Picture: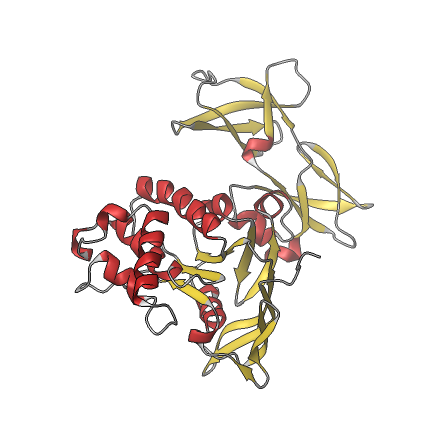
Length: 352
């Protein structure tokens, strides 16, 4: 039978610093082999949560199990060096007086491998991360991307079952960051490790992870696949924090709300509501096509796509994302319709 024991199960973890609560009722499950991204703004507690998983912090409450073993909480506390977890820090933390191979070998110190086995493992990990030709180079001779891969190689050298990454791409420029994300994901997949990434970059989380956990004020507000988090956000905060969102206030009557696009089901017992629409979910048509009449009043070209601002007859401004090759040089009359049903939230959820 396959082992379906989660790689990580956190239940109600909390961490306080004096009167400040950094993590509060943090609960999350990550399956073995998953790549999970913990996404949240600055101050949401995501780095503290990662430090609790690594063992650099003791929780004030709750429990943490790694691969089915009680690891923290209650009377349990397994120190970091016994958790079978590798860590890639935001600043890489490479030793400047060592070359790349020596930095990688440092991760194998204190183990049971013989000298030959350690050398073989260093060569294996350098090959895995594409650094074989850089083995003898000093850290100062490496580019930012090469330093990032060297830090990853050192973390992977002992063969940890879990890899933790604390915003590892934040020091890289945009084009290099995008390329390295895919490289790192492939390296981790080939290594067979469970990975947990902390980031404030939503594109990074959505493009890399199998599971995204959105954090707010110390707790996980929603966890799911990137598609679920984006398409089926459970709160207005998530809907407006991840991706672009058009927020249309409306009132509910008899369990329904009316937006410029028609009627939609309202949340139970809600009166004041908001309808949330993604700009790419708005279909634009010509005069005479079915839909809401409007007029294109502004066009912004971004290269990969363009954003139109359409004013409907009732005065609502609706943003519409269209392809970069669609011709809207001239502003004018159009019709709007939806490709999918929008999300509707009680207005109170905006202030929760």
